[in-house]
Structures are given as structure tokens and as C-alpha cells.
View 1 (cartoon, rainbow, N blue to C red):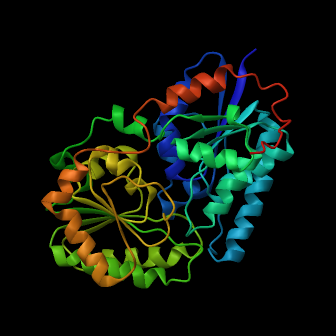
View 2 (tube, rainbow, N blue to C red):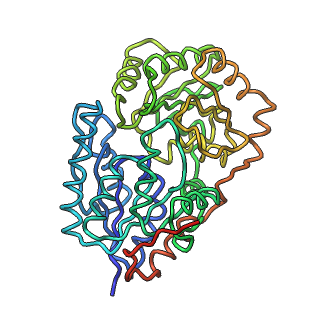
Amino acid sequence: MKRNVAFFTGSRADYGLMKPLMEIVKEDKNIIFNMIVTGSHLEKKFGSTWKQIQKDNFKISSKFKILTKDDSPKGISKSLSLAVRKTSEVLFSLKPDLLIILGDRYEALAAAQAAMIHRIPIAHIHGGESTFGLIDEAIRHSISKMSHLHFVSCQKYKKRLIQLGEKPSSIWNVGALGYDNLIRSNFLNTNELEKILKITLKPPIFLFTFHPVTLGSIDEEIIFKNILKNLLKFDGTIVITGNNADTWGEKIRKETQRLKFKKNNNIFYFESLGSKIYSSLMNISDLVIGNSSSGIIEAPYLGTPSLDIGVRQQGRIKAPSVLHSTYNSKQIFLSIKKGLSKEFKNIANRKETPYGKKGASKKIHKIISKINLQNILLKEFHDL
């Protein structure tokens, strides 16, 4: 009997990471492949990225909108409740044997809640990690407690899940899933990127993404301007990508949109680049800057220096090629300068990373296709 496996995706971020795994599962003749698409994928202002999913030859089993125009805590709570209700309806219809969720966004929490009520086993990817500056911290651990299979990116995160009471036999250290994208990617070169994006990439090239800090009391708009002001001192090219659909994210979005109407010949804004263009840009960039997890996990694998700013990613294990700065303007400037130095580039070129090497997708597929799911819902708390 074929196993019915459903993937849940609510943003370009989790989709991009899961894509290699989904391709393998889709081709497995012993698995019925389903895909649930929601969140920012369905919103024009976030790039309508559900269309890219179709271009990638994935059949979407169900897609539905949950986001409102209000990104205040009240608005996000409404989106969360909508996501629970609508995901529940889809799960009732699809009746999957296993639901696969990646990460720590509130849409993922909604999917986990719905699956738990429907008594559907959950496989959670990238659990056990820590990000002190976000509500994602609590969401991630909550999803882990509702999950039955865990696929983590390094040994420390496996130990952390055991601390949370998860059985060691239910946790696999498979490495960072995103590396599978990078390994097989035929990166676009600078000339190709310039033609596709219709821009000039004058070095130094900065790839800049700044997401809201959902547990902080900072003014994201002011911090964004402060980072940009320091980048402009280096007379290179700044490529900005759109931020997540998080609490107060519209403040950052409006600031980036204003850049379109200013005569800055070296600042370019793209809502969503797609995984191939984004990874290609990361590959040729002189510095990845901001507070995206891609600067922590993917950039070191490519040998690209990165600068993590603020508390959003605080708590993640970092490679030697990842610099950190507070929001202090002078420290940001000095950190950018260090990141561009020959000495630091030599450190980045070593491509040292704590997140494994490759093959996470194949490892996960092998486990989810063979593991016995009978009685898996009966979880015992693992005491230390």
C-alpha cells in the first residue's frame, strides 16, 4: 500500500529548502505526493511565489490565503487562526499518513496543531535550533513537541531535542537540507545575473536581507536605514531582497519600496529572486549582510563571508566566516570593513561549516519511506 505524504509550505524560505527532498519523494512510486501551499506564497506583494512552485513541476494539492493586511500582533493572530482552520479542512480531505513541516514560522505551527488534532504523524525538519530574538524560538520547540520524527542539522540540536524530552531514536542528524540545493546548482555567473536582473553588479557586491525582530523593541525602519547608510560608504552594489511576512514587517517593506523611487544607481530591490538566482548571487557576493539564516547556514558552505546583525539569529551555531554586530552604527561599519578584508575572505574560503556536508534529502527520504508509522502517535517523554 502506498504511503501518503504531504508537504506544508508557507513561504519561499521553507519551500526553497525542501525542494530537493520534494523532488525525490515525488518520484517515489511507493509514495502519494501531496503539497499544501499557503502564507506569503499566495500574496502578490511577496512575489506570488506559488507560481514558481508550479514552474518547478510540482502539483499543488491545495492552496489557500491566510494573510490579512494587518501585520500587528492582532493581525498575525488572525492569520494563525485562519491557517489552523483551513489546514484542518485540507488534512481532512487529503488524509495523509505523514505531514512534513520545516522550520519555525507561525503558519507551520498552525499546520502542526491541525495535524495533531487529526492524529496525523508529523516529521519536523530543522528542529532543536535557537533564535533568541524571535517568537520563532517558542514556535520551533512547540512544533518539535507535536512532532514524531525529527531531522536536525547538527549534533548539538539533536541533544537539545533530547533535552526537550524527545526520544533519541526519533531524531536523525542529517545536516542542513539547504546544502542539497547548493551542491547540484549550476550557478549563474556575474554576466548572466546582470542580464537576467537587468542591473550592473559593481564590486563589492552586498546581498542584503533584513527581517523583523519579533521579540525585540527596536525600530526596524531606523535600523534598516542605518545598515544601508553604512553599506553606501563602500561604493559597491547593494542587492536587497524582500523580508518575511512577520509582525511589523510592512515597516521594512515600505522603506525598501521607497528605494525604487530614489536615484540610487547601486541599490536594487527584488521581492523574491527564487532559489537559483539567490544562491548564485550569494556565490558571487563579497558579503551577505542582515539577519537571514541563509547568512548563517548557506553562505559559509559557499565560502562567502557574512555579517549577522542584531539578535534575530542569536543562538544559532555559527561558522568562522560569520561576523556578528550589534545595531551600533560604528560597529556595523567596522564589521563590514572586516568582512571585505583579504584576511577574512581567506577564512571564508576554507568553507568550514558545522552543518554537515550533503545528502540530507536522500537520508530523510529513506527514513520517511520505510519507517513504521503504526503506533507512532503514542509518544513517551524521554527523561534524562
